Every structure is written in C-alpha cells, then in structure tokens.
Image (tube, rainbow, N blue to C red; front, side):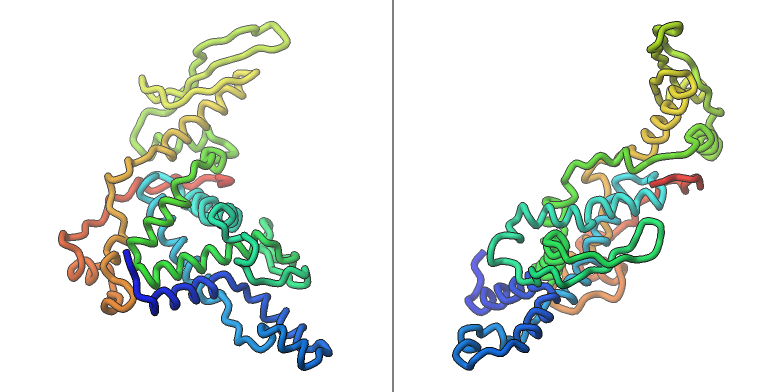
Length: 313
C-alpha cells in the first residue's frame, strides 16, 4: 500500500517519538549545564531539541495490549480463574515478553533507541509481596516501553484491526508454559469443590499401576475419577504424591481447555472500522456494532463461575 510523502514523514516522526524514552530529557538537562563553547554546542543540535518522549503513547499502548490479551484469553480459555487470567495476560504482554519481541524486531538496534545509557536513571518496580523498590533503568525496560508506544502508534495510524493482527501475530501466538501458572495448595479439595459445583459425582483416587513398592524407587500411577469418567492422572514415588498430581492434572485439563480460534468473536472487532481521521470513535460497543458491522454482534457465552480457592496463580 502506497502512502503520501506527508504521511510517511509523519509516521517516521511518530516512530521516532515511540523510541524516545523520558529519561532522555534528564540527559539533555545535564548536558545543557556543561561549560561548552558556542562552537561545541553547535556540534550537538540535540541540546536545543524540544524532546517529545513516548510516555503518553506507552500508556495508551499498555491499555490496548491489556484489552487485546484479556479478551482473547478470556474467550480462548473460558474456565480460567480470574487470578490466573491476569497471570496469563502479564506473561504475554508483560515487560519481559515485550522486551524480547522488541529485540527480535530490532527495537534495540544501534541508533534506534534514545534513552539515558549512563545508568543514572532509575525505575520503580512493584515487589511481589507488596511495596516498591528502585532499580537502574535497563535496556529491556526501554524496549518494553517502546513496544507499548509502537502499538499505540499502530492503533492511531492503522486502526484496531491492524493492531490486533500485529499483537496476535507477534505476541499472543508465542508458546508459553501456561500450566506452570496454575498451581494449588490443595488440589484434591479444589477438585472436590469443582465437581460439586458442576453437579458431578465426588472425585475418587484409584491406583492404576505401580512398580517397585518394596524397592528404594517405587512408582505409583493414580487416576482421579468422577464416577466412570477419568479426569486426570499423576505419578509419584508415593500414593499420596500421585493423588496430588492426579488432582492437579484434572484441574489443569479443565481450566486449560481451549476454544478453537475462529469459534468466538472478539469484542474489539466492533472497533475495526473506526480509525483516526475516519470518523469519531463510538461511545459504546452496541453503537459501534450497529453502525460499523455488517452483522449483529453477539456476546460470547461465559464459562462457569470459578470455585474460590487458594491458587498461587
């Protein structure tokens, strides 16, 4: 698709802004305080530049990434507990993943990023157990923020459909070990509560196989059954360990059951025809669907409400 020279210049400048970290403002202020001669200052035109950084674009991009990831995983895995859904979203559009994607796309290439490389700038991180802590600004932090800003630029220039295609193709298509995000302190109790909620027979553990019971390395295979239906299977060096793993396997099979791509309609598709310069954004999804979609938007069915438990997800 060909674009005008004016659009090309504008988009190039937007990408430049998206790759400019706010820490550069501090670097410029420090450099201005140096005792430089007029000729030396003339050699560094950046000293007089009106720096526009990516803070606002990054905020918008972060909201878009959260929206696109949340709606996709909510419909892809309809039975996920809320806390695990949040963990999924963080795993896919969190700083580490965005930094990796940015590195692959060349965001960290020489001359692309503009930020404080002196190590004087710090970022505030939220600790897992609450509270905050300051840490030096790293290249991965800069790359993640630039990726958020680039997503916002794409939305601003190309619209929601192109943005969603990019996010799904470059970020959400990655394979992560999601099963490790779903952990339970007492999976047998959670499985029992889940079966009761679904109106199924109470789960029972059955020994399926064993070897070396009297040896130093015994192995037991236990299945978790609800009536005649086998829910999960686990192995361990003791029957108790195998029962634990069987219940955990059953819960993972339930919560990680997937809906095929294409079998559900993403709510953000109602915004596909709205883009910058082509009419105002709708005030609600219903208005957007009525005005922009050729067919009526139908909300997708929700999964069963979760069983509250002590998940470490």
